[in-house]
Image 1 (cartoon, helix red, strand yellow):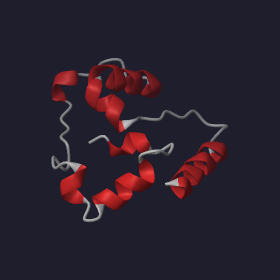
Image 2 (tube, rainbow, N blue to C red):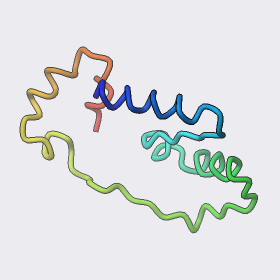
Image 3 (cartoon, one colour):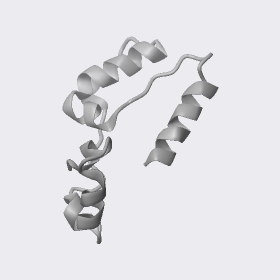
Image 4 (cartoon, rainbow, N blue to C red):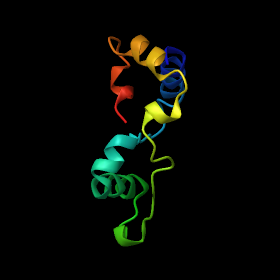
Length: 88
């Protein structure tokens, strides 16, 4: 996870001179209208029709069902800066 964060930081630095918008999946799920409106604003699209935007969760299973060694992963992450990733 730290390597991923380092790559994200590197990408932000590389593109610092260009307009950039970041979308956080959890924010999109909890407030899609706001996120899609922000994307429309960023792209200068005035007539975003939210009723036509379709998305769905790729995997509806809980993390415990998807990760074979979930207990080990949980123990490593629960008291770290990455603990929020445990919420599924």
